[in-house]
Length: 296
Length: 192
Image 1 (tube, rainbow over the protein chains, first blue to last red):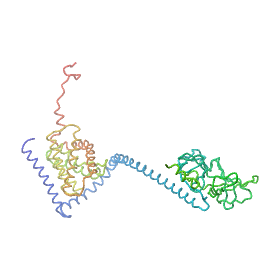
Image 2: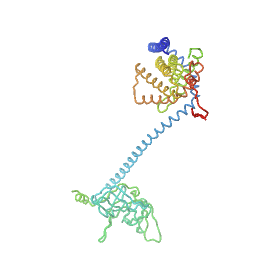
Image 3: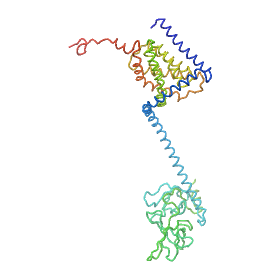
Image 4: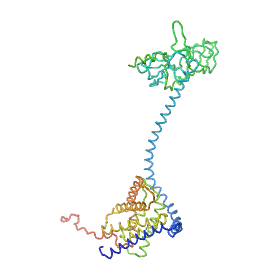
């Protein structure tokens, strides 16, 4: 192993191969595209191409099998990343959907406040629904505004579209709103423009259908006409709801020969099942005064 | 390995098969960013069984064929694989490894050496590449994949080269193994 002849021969072999490589490298850089090495490369590639193609086809199943492991591991990592991305996008979609819905409802409230015939002398206090009754009757909701914001009991509450209920209990920071779909609810209303009056009561369990009762038989009621609060006032009693707040649209009229009154079905303007933002119609001046009392 | 037509044919066959398989079958395979490198493994296998001179010659030939087939700069692979073949061959001559798992570290070291040296030469030739975490990860994964492939590749190369090897390290080691002198039940001095 330590024979000097062997060592010399070994070193010489290494030097020859290294030198050959360097010469080849230098020559390759020095020659043009049509030089010896370039021509050799083209020839070799042409000669090897069919062999490579055949071998490639023959080895495809093995390659696929080998690739399956890598792909599975890659897919696992990719799946993890995509899951996170989906989670993030889902959050964004939820946020934008919520924002869109809020904007729509707020826009509806603004339009409602500007509409002709909307009661003067009220100051709307906007609130967000923070809890709703878990029953199918959709009878009450809780909002994040209370007496500290000027909200008092029996004040009417509107949402985008029209009337949704009235405040039935108040704490400093929250208020419970009994919806017009609650069994105990009754709102004096008027059909516009005919002027026929009646009492809007719920058909319990059907939040998209209200009944306008006690409409005299002789009055001609047309489908599609608007029903608004009548703001009935007498010496003894006064309606809790100011005149002119839209309630809904006449959807159907039941004519019964026996009954003295007509039963008018009203489809509420407000989306009772999907309200998120409401406005409490406080008396002008009250909310500001209340706020002043609360704020030190 | 003595240079005979048979030996040249077998070593040449190994080189050619390694290059073709590398280009058409194993090259496109990807495992966590690493690609099997059969050429480096084949050169290391020939070098470990046939010695440094044969290793260097095989490395040079493999590099030459590889550069021809790929269309890369001629001489780069030859230079690097010559060095790899020589180094592995010298390791065999100096250390005479005979452990059954020897191909794993040898294959991994040869692959890593080839990748690092190839990258270094490419940088010296100003290929305009940059060292990134991805490149380093790929080098590491290729080394690991080659370590896994080393045992079967070395076994195949040994089988092909065996008829022309002057000394087969595993075979000679087995022959040198001293017979165990023991009693019928295997407890020396306490034979029943």
